[in-house]
Amino acid sequence: MTSDSYNLDNFIDDLRRIVASAADETNLLAQVAPLARRVVAERNWLRADMYDADPALGFGTTLLHVEADQSLFVVVDSWLPGRGVPPHDHDTWAVVVGVEGSERNIFWQRLDDATRPGYAELQRMGEQCIAPGQALAMPSGSIHSLINETPHTSLSFHVYGRHLNHTARRQFDPEHHRELPFIIDAR
Image (tube, rainbow, N blue to C red; front, side, top):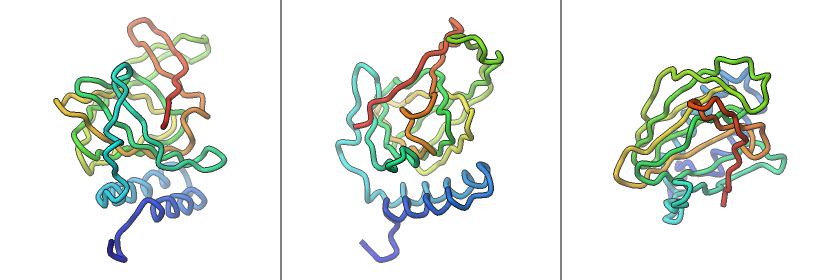
C-alpha cells in the first residue's frame, strides 16, 4: 500500500470531520459522495465474504463501521441476480456507490400526509442506475427501491448518517398502500 492510498480509516476520519462541520445536509452530501467514490476505487477494504447474500432475502449486509452512538453507519450490500428491495426510506441521509455490477434505483414520492399508521400512498417518480464508481446521494426523506438486473451478484457501498436499525426506517407496499418497519441484519 502506498502512502497516498485512501483507506476506510481515512474515509471514516474525513466523514467525522464533514459531519461536524457541514453547513447543511446538501453540503454534507456534496462532500461525502466524492470521498465515498474514492474509498470504493481503492478497494482495499473489499473481502470475498462481502458477496454472500441471504437467498431468502435476496441480499446481504456487511458492517464496515458504526459509531458508538449509532451514527455514521457504513456497510456493503450484496444483491443476488434479479433481487432487490421494495420501496423504503432511510430516515437519514445516504450515499451509495456502486462497487461491482449495477443496480437500478427507482425513486418514489409519498402522496399522503403520513398521519395514518401503517398506510402510505406512493407515486413512482423516476430512476437511476448506478454502475461501479458511480455515486447516488439521497437526502433524508428520500424513498427508493432497487433491483439487481444483472446475472451476477452485485455489490454496493453504503454510507448513512445513522445506523438504519436506530431510525424510524420504513418499507412500503405501493400496490396495497402499506407502510411497515424495515430492520436489517448487518453481520
